[in-house]
Image (cartoon, rainbow, N blue to C red; front, side, top):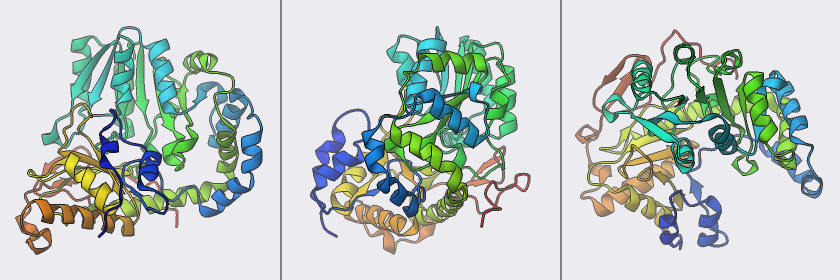
Length: 422
């Protein structure tokens, strides 16, 4: 093991995690950084797709893109959507901003912990944000009936859920989300943020997008950068009935999407099988990574349907110290959750990555435990672990036990979404 030379003070600046580019510049030329922080698809685009983008880079950078309406129409055609129900933007956070400005008038309810822009954006514009705390004892699972009662008690006018939720990875069955939308049909707006839903294999068709567009007050958000492994492009879209989608689309700048986003939208249709395969590989890695993380005594690993895991560190460990140690000594970038509402620094979110990277992460975490917290974890009996286990026979019946691996089997009620892809 050798130090990377990265000045870890860069990790303590600002409320958000340091960017990959910040760390790469701090590390210097030739340093390798393994990213367990940014929830990005590691298998897509394929190397051949990157080669194609490289060949076209000159024209992509040199010329104006088509206007946003043209690119949105093409995306709708590729995804089989009605173009009047789609608004495409420079990332899902741009859509969250416009939803707040145009559709949130008084108050917004949101479970926490969740994606920070759903709390920060309306607070910045003076709205009342009604936060519904998810409980660790329940594995941070959201009970939709209790949430509806909370919304009614607070008289919230907008309700938001993230499915799959970030950072805990919990998934809500489609039928339950549809009931949730219908129970709140009198609100100004109901938002379902599905930025991570493509990574779920719990149901064959998990999205409520088709259901939202025929309802009077429902919006579904999608983040293409996460799914397609291209965060740097900054593109995403929303689905809603034509009145809502049109209202948002009219406010977006005419050229709010860049030429690289346009190129990728045109490539998607030709590489659908590669994309499906990338999701299958990620589901495989998610199961494998859960098993590897369970080797760390005292670590609590929460079941996930996203491309990340929420973990709770052993009691004596510090999330901030571990994050800094992994960067400085192992070249590993992680996300500690101390700045997330409803979380503490005892929690970390770890992105799903291929086996070799996960082994490096586990070795780094065990090295930290050995150096700073007593005898080597390699010498400990796994049964001495003080972690907890969440056996999840189904999404409706959590049964806490003693250590949290990813479930080794799934409820037969659901057909795995990617099972047919070889």
